[in-house]
Image (cartoon, rainbow, N blue to C red; front, side, top):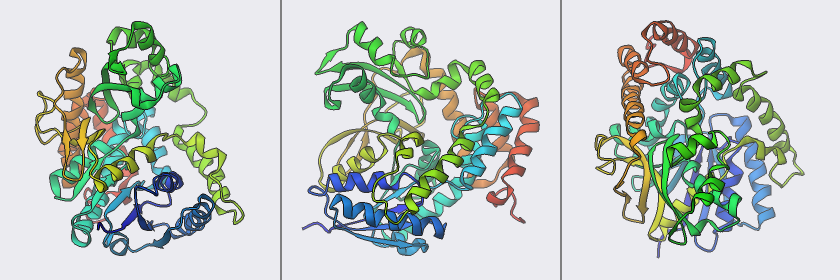
Length: 424
């Protein structure tokens, strides 16, 4: 008989944690969870979240041991599955990631462009440590990564450790969600080819019950992608990630971000005060209504779907961030890509992408070039490679701008970048 599951959440103070508990409760007959271990470095948030999770689990009728710790080794010890959702520097660092690039006329966003690189610089060393400790105390366990930028995090861990990792983003099921909203059909009826990188991907060959969608159905689904113009999607002939708004509507997006009364990070900082006030209420046993404004829909469904596929050895088709291994023929084998995979207890196997949309090849290759340089810069604390990464990025690539931008970004994040500032 298989061991009952110890499921650990690293970054359990995240407002998303209750979603994971809810999905585990839904799948309780498939997944015998003996313990949910909550870990965070912020003891105050951890205590509030643990109290809420205990009340929430009881309300769901989910009889499971809920534990908490600020000791990473204890958190990871014996865990079969470790879900990571950390934010190094918190949302205050996110706001700086947004505002500094915007001040120089560039996209200011937490995963795309120079802000995303700084998030990777802060986060990769911390995540490498999580992976290494996990290999020591739970060598057969799976790390399920939702920490952004998930593509860069997954690439760093696969290149510099041998910990088992699957990188995820709910974006892999967005086309299914759009079809459900547009046409009122079940997820399982919708299939598609999916290729690209995290937050830079395209879905093609869309089918319903095995038949190709009509032009009318394609447009109905495409209309649900509110961030990219419908006429542009029709021109592409593929469903793009909503994050492609930053590449295809760059001038418009920069202007909108600069003229907004607050950045997304500032909005989230305020929103989380409301969410955490609800979590802290000792009489509350329901997810706060404000949580819906936080985003991240589909996250828990994908994460726990992966646990089910692996634990119960059920062949499951999922979109995962994994080393390429020939799936995308114009990228290096060790480059992490976001593609359809076959998942079971034995492997997360990327499926060969028969046809990458012609107009997407150059963009995917350019951003992957940036990502690989950024990962190396993050691990080595290499200023030159950081410069080269920004030069390679299609949204930056201006040497005169980078010469001013990079020192400002690094200095603003000094306390979280020991690899760049070894003397503090």
